[in-house]
Amino acid sequence: MAGDSSLIDLTCLVMTQCMSVFEDLTSLVDVEGGTSEFTKAIAQNFPNLECLVCDLPHVVANQHRTENLDFVAGNMLEMVPPGDAILLKLIWQELALTKMAISILHDWSDDGCVKILKNCNNAIPERSKGGKVNMDMAMLVLHGAKETTEKEWAKLFQDAGFSNYKVFPVLGLRCLVEVYPD
Image (cartoon, rainbow, N blue to C red; front, side, top):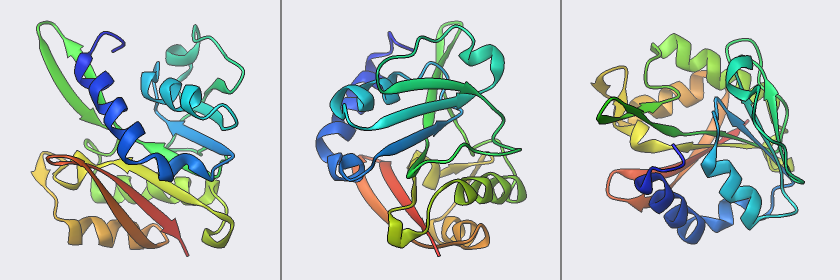
């Protein structure tokens, strides 16, 4: 993933176009973050932001902690570690000679998405205290191998206990979406 220039380009775009999303945070949890080059870039750009990458034990086992970036083993279906904001993003994986986008919520049914989003909601403070979930949303379009409309995503957000959301366009179909708890 570190060698994927499209991820590096996307990270640069998000850092320049969506900096306000991260500015007032004190902590950020990257759910199913893998080696998380994206979160490493956030940690470097925001040295006062405590970043935590949560993924399965075998994924985070050999990752190296930095001053404001740590890794923890966990399962998003059971619980999400607490933080001011939760990050769910699209991951690029190289399989043989093909690059394939896999979103955290892409392979889950609506019920599965709601369960994951509820766990995220439980991990953040109420909106008045800055709680939010940020998602890389090519997922507004790609979900469960079908097109998912913004209205359908809004219903999933509501079913998971979120009262509102805001879309930050990044590039083409790519955008960053913030959802806020009640």
